[in-house]
Image 1 (tube, rainbow, N blue to C red):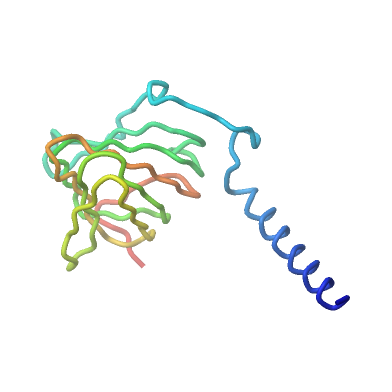
Image 2: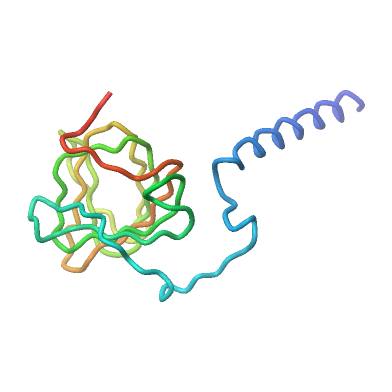
Length: 157
């Protein structure tokens, strides 16, 4: 029994140490306080990115952190008909589709329509295309440990 308790205590310590190490680069944001933000509080800003059709672009709104500086969670809104040029990002990110139908795919892959509730993980330094293929604007929520950027042409490993 003592061996079991000692093993359980070591496992708990290892878990706590790992969780504390992650806390320095990952939320909780806002000092660990619970936060509620209605959609009306988010203001979107132009990223400057333009699609293959230069009349289409992307806007963003930070939820926590700052997408232009470091770790963040942010909404990204794509104009209807937006198709990116082949590009890459320096860092990995995780995305969930909130509105519209998007496609996010690497060269040679068959695009899949991703509607609300869909998810993708985009590895950094991997060339890909992102498109808003619905008649309405598309919106995603991204979580990323570093600033959001894009390279055209893509920078790959």
